[in-house]
Image (cartoon, rainbow, N blue to C red; front, side, top):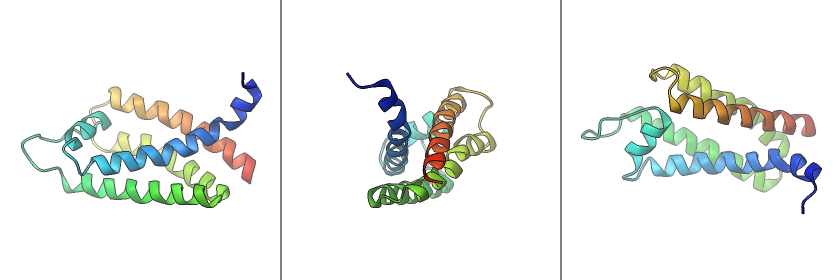
Length: 131
């Protein structure tokens, strides 16, 4: 069985690998028939009988760019850069969701808050380790 200290020491890396994965999956799914469901889950419902708002595609492009950048930096072993990106980008999930015109504190908001809490904790751990 794994040592508890080892698990606790490596969990920020689990978040660091999860973060670009979720961004890339969301970006790719935006260009599939699942796009409307993804938007609803994220708190940005789109009319089903109309094309998605242009800003949804721009947002998907940003997620794709950020996810690729973090994944490439992780692959290259540039953990200082990864720690800075995660520490600055993770809070934007909650801020962006809050300012996007969403309908208050619904499930999507609280999902982002949980992700923000986990991500910020992991980011702080990585920043402390590499800076």
